[in-house]
Length: 272
Image (cartoon, rainbow, N blue to C red; front, side):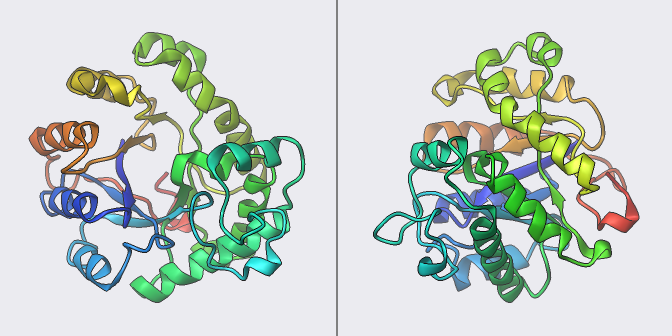
């Protein structure tokens, strides 16, 4: 199982929590929002101090922000004022076929290039804030970008597919898991058809309002992970109560023995 901490670069307390967990080898991967204004030199340098202990990936930001590609080239993606849209608006555009995959591909390319500039290496994997990379047209634009990279350096792309039987057995926010899994299943099929590496197994979805139950949820999600290549998505932080709950659980979780840590490997190594 790969424990991946999302949202690095979103806020200083989140960054601090993630770097601490990485230094303790409590997580395997970190997904970075390079399009966030908080993802500055200080945040990048802090993450570089633990980059040898975790896999670093790109957490695409396609909502509620400023695009890194020229806004005038993203007519169907951005708002009239040139900003990335709210979640619901992006979903409506994607679901109604009003979003152009080629424009998404440009924004993905711009954020990928920013990641390379900041860290001096390409991301080992790609996912997104609130799983928007799986929406129609967005998934196709991302896939087109990945396929344009050298085959030996293609990143893994996350899918959030949770089978019905697993959701029921796991017993954690079943309907939320199944709802997020709808586009996850579609995305997984697309990635597998195109030969883009992706995870087999996913967990980490729950009702954040029930954060006091996270110790039990974490145990259930871990116990029902399908395979070693499954991703457990986590959101540690120090300020928001639900993030703090995750951080506290992860900090107390026993780190794996030497040689047992997993991460995202280049495609040709076929670790996933």
